[in-house]
Amino acid sequence: HGDFEWSCYWSDDGPKICTLENGTEVAGSDSDDNEFCEIDTKCTAFGGSCYTGVTDCPKGQGIIEDGCGKDGCVCCSPSSCSGDECFYNGSCIDHDTGFGDKCNHYYCAVGQLNHMYRDNEWWDDCYLYYCINGTEYSQRDPACCEYKGEFHANGRYIISDCGILFCLDSVVVATEYVNRECVSSRCMVANDPHISGFGEPGYYDWHERCNFSLAQPGYGYDPSFALYSQFTVCPSIYSSAASCVGDTVYHDNSNVLFADLKNLSRIYVNNVPYTLSTFLKPLIIGGEETTVFRISDTKVRVLGASGLLVEFDVNWVNVWAMPTAVDSLHGLCNPFISRDGAVVPTVTEFAQSWK
Image (cartoon, rainbow, N blue to C red; front, side):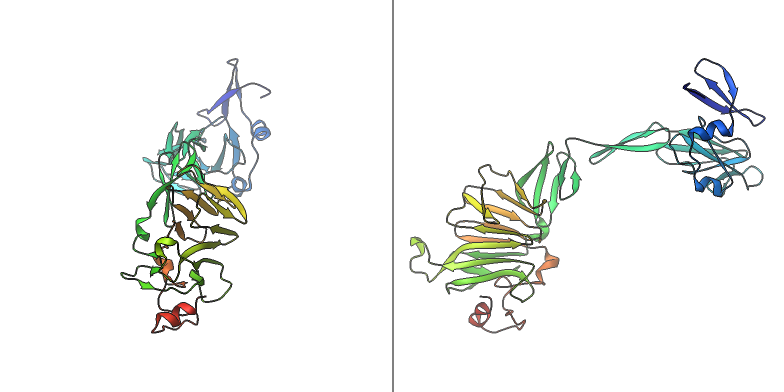
């Protein structure tokens, strides 16, 4: 074939005829084809040969899909079918039967399997898919957003555990929304402090000044993740109270976040201070494990890799967890199960076990 472009068809008596770009017709041969097509074991296993420049096989032969090792090559194999049936991928197809996929159409007519390429293209979220010579290709929309290893279409919400983000022209932005599945599984530690457990309708009070575990998996002292809060001296507005919720630390797998509730202009991640000056512009840390963002002058949220959505405010801490995870979380947010796993009758016995 040299450097010419060519197209081919099967003649009535069997040999393949190739037309070169200068109009000359020549008889094709297996040797010419094989210089271009790589012979694949799938094709040879069916006793077939690989050809280029054709979409159909000669009568009496059928197509073995993906039987050759290169795009633009067709594997033709002797048919083992009878009568008007057509041979395709080792199976016999009835006469007058059409089938295929988005890039290829096949039609069996009196023992001849006709093959036609489809010139299709279609969108699926972030990707444009299109067909070239029977092969499907894809191209990502540059306006899509990548978050935690997945791509999300422009203009779509991104639900990640209890948090909801948004894709805006290739940029992930935060929202004030909470996944509706998590709304009923919130824990709140507020003011001096009143504590309502995950999904609990009421609250209990606990005023001892100390550091407590609010939420963690299991009962140990070295959990894989945890939320700790310091109950400390109250501001003047609560001067008569024994303690108020204060500095809070979120151990989110490999990241440790520290929040001074009295000064939320910045937050510390692994001892590094970060200023969150822009509302809803997330700070994504640790290979997208932890997402931190400001939703108001006084509120900062952390969407953790552990699945907890934590909100820091001047006088309280909110924690949302997926309902399926609540039963495995313990601490002050899960009254009244103490650190030894027992249900205890008093707040004092319960709370002191979570120091």
